[in-house]
Each structure stands twice: as C-alpha cells, then as structure tokens.
Image 1 (cartoon, one colour):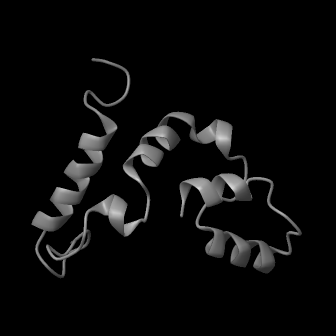
Image 2 (image 1 turned 90 degrees about the horizontal axis):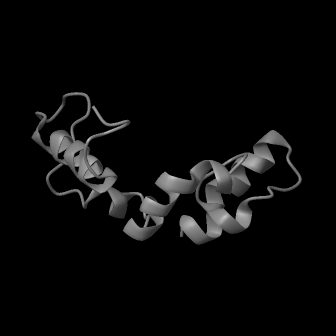
Length: 93
C-alpha cells in the first residue's frame, strides 16, 4: 500500500464533493446538486489548492484563512499582526 491516498488529491476532493451530493437532503454531509464545485465554494484556485496540499506547513505557522476572516480573528484574539497575511492574500483570494 503506498503511503497516503492511492490516488491524486484532486480526485479525492472531487470524490468527497460527489459523495456529499449523493447523500439524501437533510442528512449530515449533504451537498446540494445546485452548489458549485467544492474549490469554487471555497474560492480557491485548483493550482493553489494543489500547491498548499504539498507545502502547507512551510507556508503557514499560525492562523490561516481569507484576509477578511484572518483580520477578524486577529482582532478578536488581540493579535497586532499576522506574519503570514501575504500568503493568505495570495492563496485565499
């Protein structure tokens, strides 16, 4: 058995998305057939997703997310700055 998943990450994400669309409405994990693909819903470019899947820990050491949510979290937590805001701007826009 190879280390990790025996298929590409993109295929796995699509499998999770399709599974959620098959689950009956009202059940936990249900995704509406009208919902756009998962990466579109997360507003992440596929190329950025693949890069992050391979290099996440080297790019982020603290909070991660959209710039708006990152700024709100920093304010709530009383943080003066986030060293990885530029990476969040690049990967989550």
